[in-house]
Each structure stands twice: as structure tokens, then as C-alpha cells.
Length: 319
Image (cartoon, rainbow, N blue to C red; front, side):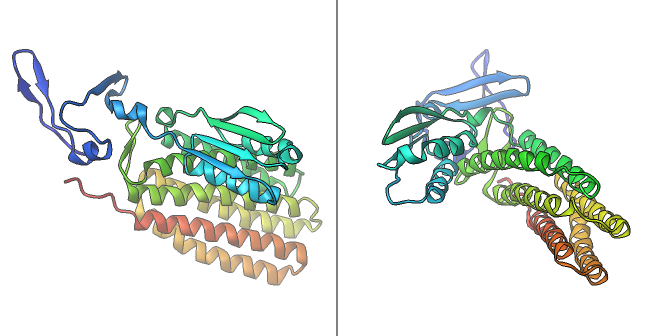
């Protein structure tokens, strides 16, 4: 956080100096207009250049491409903050239903034009009105619910519910990554006064990726755990899974509180949990148990990676 002194200007006005980096990032010079917006949190500044940012367009040629390749290019264009995406080719009509389903899974995109050979998508998302911290908390809450239901999946079938929520997580993760990418290259401040420097963006990207990976693993564990028969084995496996959930909760606590000591503990406990997974599999061998414990170890590995991202992040000193 930077501090600026108020300077008296004339009889009734005061002025404050603006950071040179912000002026440079917004291409401002002497005489340009600055807009001041008052909200419940204080004052926010924006420039006229904010309303005239480059309108990015991209054209995706779909001919001779698989639907998977087309999906990947749509997601890539979305993450790279293109305002308009045009899909063109003779095979558009054959893939139209799937293409539109992919578009519906990306927040803010709407189809504005469609013919047999063309689909045009426009971005209607106002990223500056989205609180990234609230978005991260929202994804975290969904993931916690998925973990709870995946654990209880040893006794009941929760797979379909978890599967649907995993789609929600993916949608919110893509949105979060898109906002972060728009901040790279300069400090990004939205109406919620969230300042995101490039180093913090890297750490946040790791946390956000963790949500997506944890969601995937909980979904896969739920798929294999619903038909287990041995009650004693299920009890031990459920207990092990609860420890992994606790590790995830400690990770998020270290993130929210910026507690590196807690993050170090997460990393160390993760090593122990991987060994417990290996011991469990030796005690209860079998293909299905091997699949479940493998997904559990991947969960732990993902959590440990994020713990290291928290440990390795230091907020830059303000000049």
C-alpha cells in the first residue's frame, strides 16, 4: 500500500500526487481527464483510457479441427481476454450444439450471431465489478462441500451431485484466471480496491488451480468409492480422507491469514499423509483401492504445491 500526502491547492481544493507506474500503465499525460468515483469503500480513480481499451477480436478457423481442438481454442481465447470470438468453417453447423455448450460454461460470453458456417461470441463481462477475493472464497466453499460429500460417498452415492459442482468450479476457475491475466503487466485495482501485483497474481493462480484439481480428484474418488464392501476398510479410508480434508482447510487458513508457518506445516503433514496412503494400500491391496489412494495422493500433492506458493510469496515493498 502506498501513502500520499494531501497538498492544499487554492482556497477550497486539495491535490494528491499519483504513482508514476499507474500513469504509465494507463497511458496518461498532462491534461488528460481522471474520473473520481465515490463508493462505500472510499474513492476510486479511473481514466478515460479505461473506456477505450483495445477491443480484442480473434477468428478461430474450425475446418479440419476436432471438437476438442475447437474447445481448447475457445477457452484459450477466453483466458487471454478476447472481447469477441468468431468461429468460422464449414463444420460449424455440425458442432454448433457442442460449441454453444462450451460457450455457456464460460462466464460472460454470449452468442451474438450464428449462421450455418459462423458463430460470433461477445464478452459482456465487466471484470472491474468482480471482487476476486469474494470469488476465491465462493470457489473454496463449493470445494469444501464437494470434499464433505466425497467423504460421505463411502456410504452413499453422491457422484452425480459432485460431478455437477465440479463443472461450477471449472467455470469459476476460468473466470478467476481470466481476471488475473488481465492484471498481468501492471497493478490491477478494481472497484473493490483489490491491488494485484504480478507476483501475487502468480500465487493466486496456484491457489485457483488448486480448486480445479481438488474438484477433479474428489469427483474421481467419489466415482470409485461408492461400491466398496469392507466396512472396516471403508472406515479407515474415510478417516484418511478426513485428514486430507483437514490439510486442505489448513492450506486455505494459511492463505486467508497469510500465515507462512501454517503453510510450512501443511507441506510437512502432506509428506506424512502420502506415506499413510501407501501403508493403507499395502494393508488393503486391490485395483479400486489403488485408484482411490492414487487420487488421494494427487490431492495431497496439489495442496502441498499451493502451500509452497504461499511460502514463496513476499509482498513487494512500496517505493
